[in-house]
Amino acid sequence: MVIIRKCRKADAKGIMNVCFKTGYMGEDATGHFSDVKLFGLLFCLYYPRYEREHSFVAEDNREIVGYILGSPDSELQERLFLAKIGWRIPIRLFFVTSWRYFQDIKTILHFIRLPRSNPNFNINKKYPAHLHIDILEKYQRKGIGSKLMDKFETHMRKLGVKGIHLGTSEGNYKAVPFYKKKGYKIIHRDKMGMWPDAPEKRGLLFAKKLI
Image 1 (cartoon, rainbow, N blue to C red):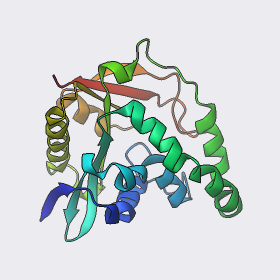
Image 2 (image 1 turned 90 degrees about the vertical axis):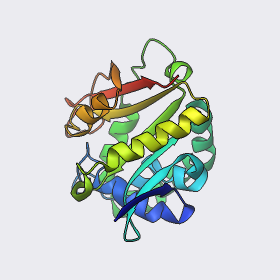
Image 3 (image 1 turned 120 degrees about the horizontal axis):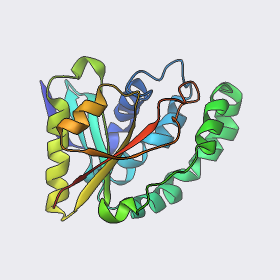
């Protein structure tokens, strides 16, 4: 039976697995990226290490099958990420990725070159919280995503957070209608996609007011 609970530091490995298995526009990133640890550093490992009090996991028989990770203060989180995780990324790139997973360098360079086409207002002022939600494919369409989202939103309301934002891709065909169903609206479209092999699948920014 799947249970929803608060995130623990020991969940990091399971979270990284889910992140990678859903990391390519909702699909398995295998074949598009190789360095799983670097992928985790970029996209998920910060949260079980430093903001697990704001994150939740879905667990089935002691296996992490989904999660919702986030922060009530995105501006603060961005600074903490750079201080606590950011320095690890170039070290990993130089000493591991460039030697063992050289094919990932092209993708990393694409990430770096992405145009920073921000919305015409400060997203963190209107919608200060952000989230990342992912669920393994075999556990999707079972109501787990809604339970995780409801848990996170209730937690943010208790903290007095006035709004949440999240990012995804036009190519994440299952996530886009889910976010709309949960009351999130598209407030911005990037000029291009995050992945070098799918630049036409533009990034989307969703947001929702809580109070």
